Image (tube, rainbow, N blue to C red; front, side, top):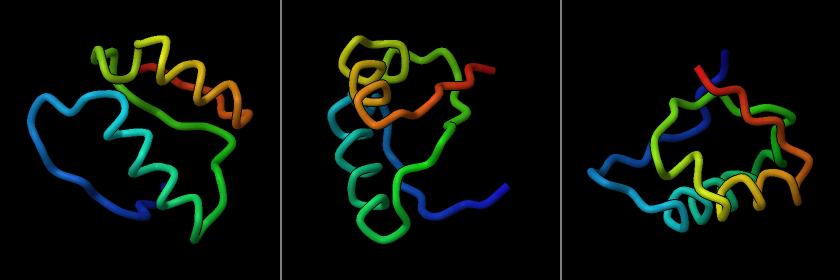
Amino acid sequence: MTILGIDIGTSMPSLRVIRYLDQLAEWHGYPKQIRVDNGSEFTSSVFTDWASAHGIYIDYI
């Protein structure tokens, strides 16, 4: 497992998560897979549509 960054906060909305992942992708490219919990920021259609658009598989724990 590789950790490329960390963004700490409470009740982070999907758009904030996406913005941070897009920033990381500028340096490292988009991952093939992301492992996340079932939080609302990761199960929203905004996040799942973004992941699908970038060919990212969401692996829910």
